[in-house]
Structures are given as C-alpha cells and as structure tokens.
Length: 165
Ligand SMILES: [Zn+2]
Image 1 (spheres, protein in one colour):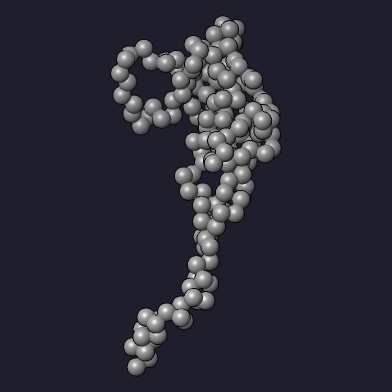
Image 2: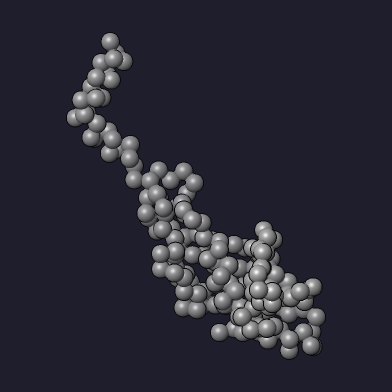
C-alpha cells in the first residue's frame, strides 16, 4: 500500500514527485472488467491547489481485456498521462456534480491519498464499455455462418429467382 500523507509532505515541500512500480496483485480489477497481469509503473506529481491537490499521473503498463465482439482476450495499453484533482469529501449534504467533477476524486481520509487505489480507479475508468481487440473486429464471422446456412432457406431461393429473373 502506498499511502501518502499530503499534509506532512506539503509542510516541507511544494511539490511531491514519486515513481512507483505497482504489483498486479495490488491492482485487482472486477473480474468481468479485465485483468492486470504485469506490474504497472507510475510517475506521480502532486501539487497543492485551491480546494485540494492537483495530481498528474504517467502510467506504463497494460490491461488484458476481452473483446466484446469476438470474445478473444487482448492486451490494451493503459492511459499514458492523466490529470486529476483530488479533494476531501464535500461537507454539504447535497452535492450537484458537474462535468468537471468527473475528474475529481475524493479522499477518504483528509489529506491522504493511496496511490495504488487512485491508479486502480483510473484504470477502471479507462476501460471502454465495449472493448474491441481492433476497431474493425468482425466478431464471430457471422458472414461465414450465413454462407453455410442460407442456401437451405427457401426465402433466399425466391430472392435469387427474383434477382436473376
Ligand atoms: Zn475482437
């Protein structure tokens, strides 16, 4: 666990910079989402800002996903660079989130950030809803199936007659 006490750090420094190699077992993803199989290298820079902290993360690693069309596993690079804003949980009872707030993470403990948890969260957010092994993945090769099955279908025979007749 890489937990940073930001209050302590920023009492002495203006900027925090750190490199971490996070082992896959500390980045477990929900099983149906994907899997991290190799260590992920991150370089984190944190600066204090208005309401909290500005965090920039450079990542090197990949995640194994399952293609939503052909169901084959494939490896996808993790996002190279991310900018985040983190702050303590808002005190107001009702919070209206705007688009900008989607880039905000809240600290569970004031002025404390768990780098691994932050990286894990960003990896999860980076995984597309319907991952594709390549943009033009043809899926199950439905066309091949169609070729084999269709001659038996009388509707196609009629259609063929109409077209040639
Ligand atoms: Zn595919």
